[in-house]
Length: 143
Image (tube, rainbow, N blue to C red; front, side, top):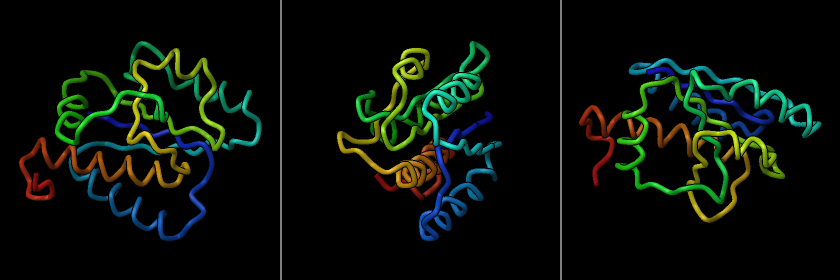
């Protein structure tokens, strides 16, 4: 399995950056992960760059507050049943362009609440590690 995470904007907050890096380090023991940061200054240019990562060779997952919600176990089952590279798209503060949502294979929400992109990135990396742990039967997920 290969995972690519497309992040709109940089992670400025040190506490987020540190935890994200820890989870990415743990994840890469099991799967390949690539993180790509996109500047989010101009929504049109950002959308074009995001759309470059959506194609039929990959499974694109748009993170948005109005997407489908899974339990951690369901999320683990979901990502491991895909037979393609997974690409997660984390949008800018104003949300994703409608076209990005429409062209993605699935829209995914971690909550009915809205999170800053840095927090969404942290939640994604934690849930990816949890999903991998569930899949491998480790003690990290204790439910």
